[in-house]
Length: 391
Image (cartoon, rainbow, N blue to C red; front, top):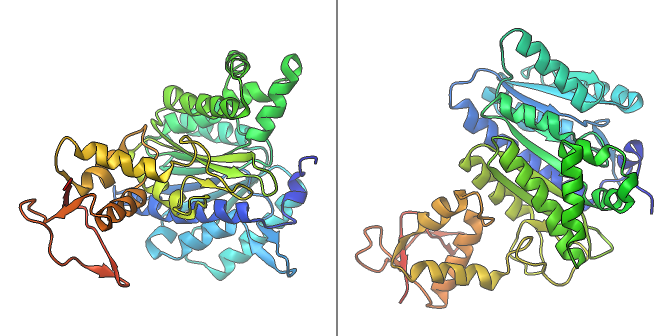
């Protein structure tokens, strides 16, 4: 089946699009609320591949796309509405015309927000021009959340992502990584042209990735090599040490369609994004996760969906050295760059282990077993300030 064009993409609203938009709107609300506390009076949201602003619903009615969903979140909080500048970039003139109409209509209905800015053009050159203009004035971009969501592989150039992250220590990027497209390009070998070089930042990196993939023996190994290579680039070539990927499986085949990759320069953003992704994720284990499995009936390996018993065993292994605060798992560990688990995963596993009497929950002083604890909707809770130990 051939890849959809940019225009065809908006003719159908799929589960994977809903998952992407849900992650986006839940996280940007948290991001802007955290960043504004540092005293910044100007924040920026950039949608580099904005599209037309809506999708076609099954009943014929339009469904809000990423531009309108982001604006709705920003408009829902008066303090954000007055501080966040939104910028929407779209290269297709037909889609851009529709986008402008939706943006103007939203602003008319929500005059408290800053008027959305929009530009007809491609993401990388448009952002390069804006950064050049700021640099000429000895200025840098304000704290920015940048959504990079191309329809295919073209356009998500590493050079501009690197520049954005280096220009502002509070900048973050959330991007669509089309691994299916990358696999096709790698299959062309000497006829790859420059698409992959732009995605990775250089011809040499494209050659290095090809060599890594050639050394693999299975499809799963090749996929892991591709994703790991890109994550390593973000961690080593930009200030974004905290990178997490969300795997999206094809609807009708047990292979990966794409990844949603978040790059942050701060551990708190990393921890929050993992928690958001985990709650949106759907896996065969039924525990949430960093994946949207649509066709699979069996879990993937630990890179993508941590096997649940392995999560539980990792907690028990940590407790072999002695009693730990719950915050050790739910704050300290989840903020480590190499840890793919989130607070929600640890809390769920800890409560399961307690119910099975494989751990003991201690009081907030750590001296006695905990007595009655609060319940939420009848379910026992576990605060970060309790302690846990082996029986």
